[in-house]
Image 1 (cartoon, rainbow, N blue to C red):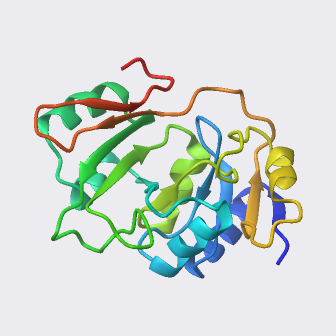
Image 2 (tube, rainbow, N blue to C red; image 1 turned 120 degrees about the vertical axis):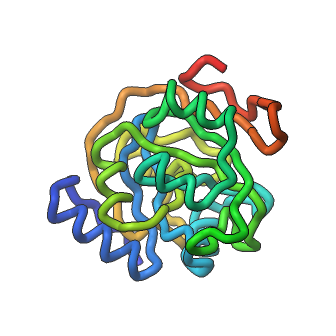
Length: 204
């Protein structure tokens, strides 16, 4: 199937929600670069995400939550996470935390599951409304083929996936995004210990 490209209007967002509910993949703008969303509770959708991106199975994707409050239902929150969230969320920060065993639903950071997930709350209204309207977390990972540059324009995504056997289903076109660094990723899996996994736009 060919990737469809729609200008990011309310109607296009409604279309994107239908794609996500059907287990499909949607490329959309975030406050960093274009990202790829799928239903992170749906293992088939996550398998497809890894297939489309050609992403190694040992590299988990993060999840986009509608709020910090929603994220707390799914991950073991801690003091350090609270401090960082108060200062920087919503915004370009990823907090890697253990998944709760009693979460409302299981999330799949990889097709094989996983014990932890990166928590993102986007400050871009489009990304935020997409996950809010969807009603549960979606994956968030850059909308590129593994190893290729992060895309900041719809044309770059189309170029990378031209001729690919598997592509995202829908591209929400928000035009050219400013080229900013990715989110800063901080591993908080060990109590009272912060490990910077990726230095991004927020100084660690």
